[in-house]
Image 1 (cartoon, rainbow, N blue to C red):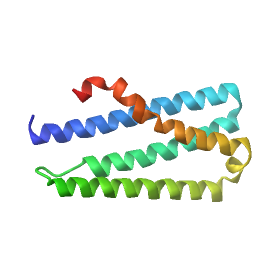
Image 2 (cartoon, rainbow, N blue to C red; image 1 turned 30 degrees about the vertical axis):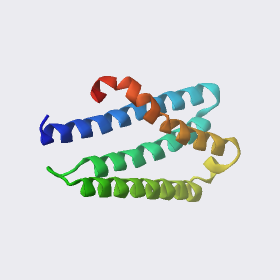
Image 3 (cartoon, rainbow, N blue to C red; image 1 turned 90 degrees about the horizontal axis):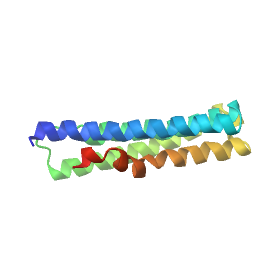
Length: 135
C-alpha cells in the first residue's frame, strides 16, 4: 500500500468513526425524545455534538499528514489533535454554561453529560462496525 493510499485510508477510517459517532448520537437523541421530552432531547443533542465536533477536529488534525511524515511529526500531530480536542470540549461546555443555562440544571445537565459520554462509546463500537477497514 502506497503512502497516499495509507493517508486516504486513515482519513476514511477517521471519518468512519465520526459517522458511527453521529449514528449513535442520533439514536441517543431520538430515544431521549421518546422517553422524556423535547428539551431533554435538546440537551442530549448538545452533549453529543460537543463530542462529535471535538472528534472531528482531532481526526482532521491528526490524520491529514503530509507524505513521508516522520514518526516524530505523526506523534506531534496526535498531541496537537488531542490537546485541541480537550480545548474544544472545554470551550463548548463553557459556551453551554453561559448561553444555555436551562440545559445545565437538574436532569437536563445529567442528560447533557451522559449523552456526551455515550458519544464516546463510538470508539468502542466503531471497530466492530468498520471491521473491514481495520484489515
